[in-house]
Image (tube, rainbow, N blue to C red; front, side, top):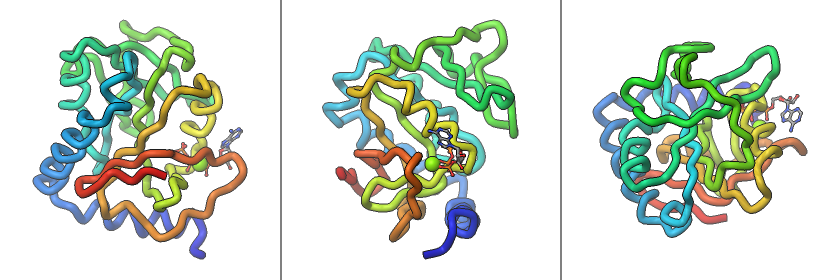
Length: 190
Ligand SMILES: Nc1ncnc2c1ncn2[C@@H]1O[C@H](COP(=O)(O)OP(=O)(O)OP(=O)(O)O)[C@@H](O)[C@H]1O
Ligand SMILES: [Mg+2]
C-alpha cells in the first residue's frame, strides 16, 4: 500500500484536475444530498469547514444551515497549540479572512473558544477517504484531535468528490474513522 505522503500527492492531483465549474456543480449535488439526510436535519449545531483550494465548497451550505435556524461553527487553526479553535459564524460572506496556509478562518473580532462538546455534527474536509471510512487528512492530525474532544454521540460526516475516494487509506491507531461520506453520486454509510 502506498504511504500517506504518496497518497496525498496522488489524490490531490486528481482533485486539483477538476475544473472550478465541475467542483461547483458537484459541490451543489453534495450539499443537496447532505441536507436530505436525517442526521443533518436533526443536528442543531453544525461544524462546517471553510473550503480552501479544491475542496468541496461549503459557503452555500453554511448559508442554508443558518437559514434553517441551526448554529454554524467554524475553526481557526492554532498552530502553536496544534488545535482548532471553534467559533460561531453568522455571515459566511463577511466572517472569514485568509489565515494559516491561506485557509479561510474567522476574523479576530468574532473569535470565541467554544467547547467541541457544543457540536452535534461535524463536516470534515479531507484529502481522501476509503469506503471503510478511513480518512486521509493533510497530515497535521488537527481533525483527529478535534474528534477526541467532541461528545461521543456527536456525528462526523465527510464531504468529498468521487475523485477523492480511494481503495485503501493506511489508518494509524490515532486515526478516527468517519461513519458517513457524502459524494456527488452517493452516500457511503460504513
Ligand atoms: N489523537 C491524537 N493525539 C495526539 N497526536 C495525534 C493525534 N492524532 C494525530 N496526531 C499526530 O498528528 C500526526 C498527523 O496525523 P495524521 O497523519 O493522521 O493527520 P491527518 O489526519 O492526515 O491530518 P488532519 O486531521 O489535520 O487533516 C500524527 O503523526 C500524530 O503525531
Ligand atoms: Mg489522521
